[in-house]
Image (cartoon, rainbow, N blue to C red; front, side, top):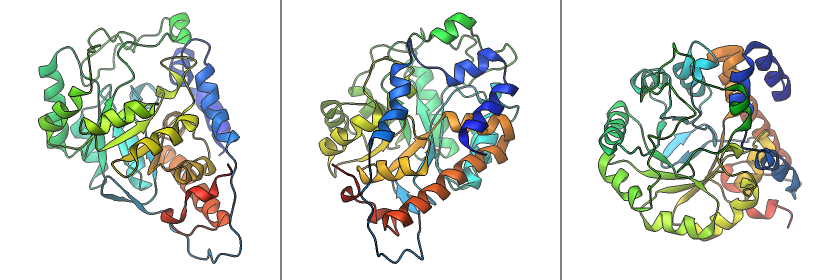
Length: 340
């Protein structure tokens, strides 16, 4: 099933306010739309007359071997979409060989998610809260449960203005809880607005895990993240859900890659809807790409199997795109494939 059809099916199944929560962006949704358009603006220069009988998408992300460089981005409240919630998403990701990133605003305990992942790698996304002791307890739990890294979301000191949620008066259904027992998903008053680069080192010390900083769109910020001890930086504008009018991630990726060089890995999300988008991102210097909303639609429609199907679709498209571009391994997806 094509992603547009999958989303349409999910929309039929979900209450309007839940669909809008997942699908929507900030204010006029300019950045959300441009995320998609920016990948379309990138053009490829494929190689010809290469032997592409054996193409492999396998790679490594922060030292962990994965079947392909397409991961599941952290998104909130999965049990709104399907009773299986985050464990079903995690199991589907593991089935498809994808790295899974669990949100702080999970509706299932991280230990249940870890069990669903088995031996597959997963990371824990962190919001630093005003209650630092509570934050510390989360990251220690994640480390104990087997998380391989922490993802510090840096672009949410305050919540973006999401008009769909305001119009719908969206609240998390009362029967659902989260890791932090929030019952007002639109209220981030508990989140510390004073998070700085110093918190990168604090998180790394606390959990003794590598820290990835998510939400980076500028070269200077990327350099400061690495200087502060980040193992990787993640180019993201929160799926267009924070500052409307912010640069599209495909447009920001090159600047961040150039700034970081070989000092850290770079990841990207935002508007990735095709395997060719992943190919473009890899050619522009990303180590991995992450998808969010398509996974939510797959979960809604098919639970664990739906998630696996979405990720398998991305992987198959990437493999085909690599063959057509003359690249048999991820290492052969190089900058010369991008039309300048």
